[in-house]
Length: 81
Ligand code: SF4
Image (spheres, rainbow, N blue to C red):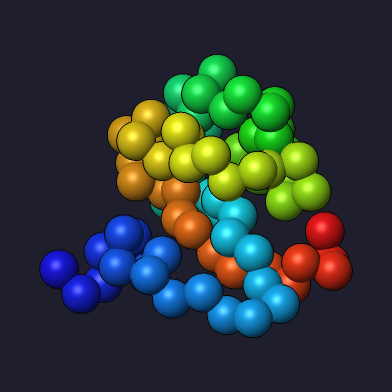
């Protein structure tokens, strides 16, 4: 499956690091992901959950916890976090 999350992770851009991202459009605010983050990086904001990219260590344990498939890997500049 060419657009799967795992195939996306095969591409790493210099100067960038992977982090989890929650789609505010797809999040149903169930809170299931919160307890799956060992770093406490997921927080409630405006009735939706978000990931603090400075706290996220990309352990990826939140991905499979989401019933709405709202959590995605994104690359952010390492010097921006
Ligand atoms: S598990 Fe998914 S739907 Fe539930 S709060 Fe987290 S991101 Fe939103």
